[in-house]
Length: 366
Image 1 (cartoon, helix red, strand yellow):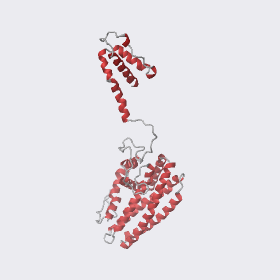
Image 2 (cartoon, helix red, strand yellow; image 1 turned 180 degrees about the vertical axis):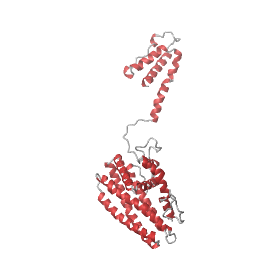
Image 3 (spheres, helix red, strand yellow; image 1 turned 135 degrees about the vertical axis):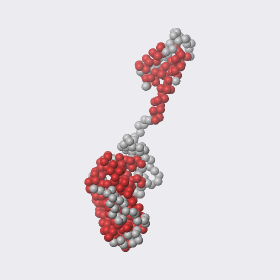
């Protein structure tokens, strides 16, 4: 391409020189002073580029000399367009935001993630998460914060003497969803994530002590919730309410402290190393039999604050069988059960008995 462009320029130069002299009809000899142009330095063009226009000049008639006037622009238009569409820069690459790294070829996620001005997450440390290390902790922490907020809203208006069915529904949501999720999160951190992180960042002892204190509040509320299921009473609700609020007051600074450590983690670990550890966490939860609950809660809460690219990457990084189970079985079940429980507890209308896959009545409303 370069040789052809250079040859076109030389041919165009020859044509300009020829038209400025007394040219004869095609086939006749030229004047001696116009037969050859001035010598072009050999350093400026290769032997292949110089031989082509000379041969074309000897063979082509004078009437065909009008075409080379447009050829240089046509020949150069394609490289110019390519340079505009694909500019080549040598500036150092900026950190790749979470949601754009290692995207699948079939992903429709955008290739850039500008940080929005308005806060999307409830975190006080990373209200607008973009980098991968910011989202590492926020994916589970945002789910815990949102469920704690739902629990406080439910307890603030729950009247089990007027709506006795809410006592059993609260027991199902708190024990089967909230407690299991928080306990699974803490256990996975202590067994897998904290030991890996402590190899380069020292903090595990304090985090483990915080977990023990938080689990005490969970156990107290769990005990009262069992009593509430067996004998609905507003007096029991009044005992649960401050304990749950105190649990949230202790949990929020604990989560924020762990999120601050994410900045240190990014300095000593790569995203690939972190992805390997997260894959171990998913396998650990699946082995314990609670992976479906953890993933469908994370998937749902991520859709409330994550960008389309972050949501797409979270889903694509899961193993293929897990993706299919989450999309077609686990998450549809979550929308009809756990999420519906929260909506019913915040409302005042007794939910209709829900039927499972085998036609069984849902235990929380019968």
